[in-house]
Image (tube, rainbow, N blue to C red; front, side):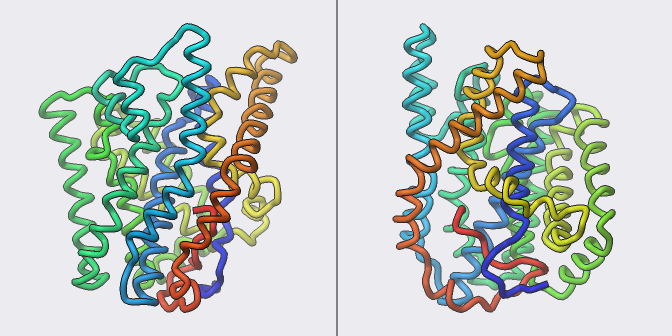
Length: 365
């Protein structure tokens, strides 16, 4: 495993798997737990953002928060606000105007709390709850990480582990003690930060000898990921709601992290090499706009009455890909080119922090 490479091989493939888990669920195939796709995005985001920040901190001794936030704005805002503008216009013209609460929450990345406090209502942008959580994470975590790193990466990891346990206990209190509804527990940042924190913890501990030894065992066989996936299905679908809304979210995130570690080591094997195929990688590259636009794309597919549900799904997926590709090439690419000017050059040039089967994150972050 080359820990000095400049490309994280299986990343785009994992993104594609995550977004299509959501798409299949929202098409109406409820047997596929769509929120596992979102959990995968959370763990990936926590890991990648922390890995990038650690690279910069290791190479230069500091983290430029100004550059970090500039990169995040250029990466996320253009596609998101273009999606909001089009969605607002479509809903307005079809007689479904947004209320003030939904409009304001969408502008300030607070759809997650709008959903949490209103029972997760059905809207054209309801799925933006996860983007709200991600944005709140981007806002808070870099500052917290810089503070934690003053005591060293080991202490930062231990503190983060305590925080993860604290979030689990907080969910238990809310759901079982105070009988807060599932909509809040599902959508709120304060109840879902542990998913992202699991990814952060993976990045913080990945370079330790203990973690590398565990990773080697986890990736010792191409069949091992099937065990992880089986445990993930059991955790998500075979145990009751009380488990899911208390400790289940965290268990799912840990299993997703295990699967990520396995894929980073096994992507060259025959069973998992499809993660690096050109088509899958492209779908991973456009996973962000795919997530943004998939509800509109699937809605268009439902109007194609050819070959039954299979034809509708195929048409919907094609529409999703077309919309996402348009967003990526027309809206996002110019800002991604500008974003590269704000990359931490020192960190990119000298990578000394090692991790199992992990290199740097791709520019798609």
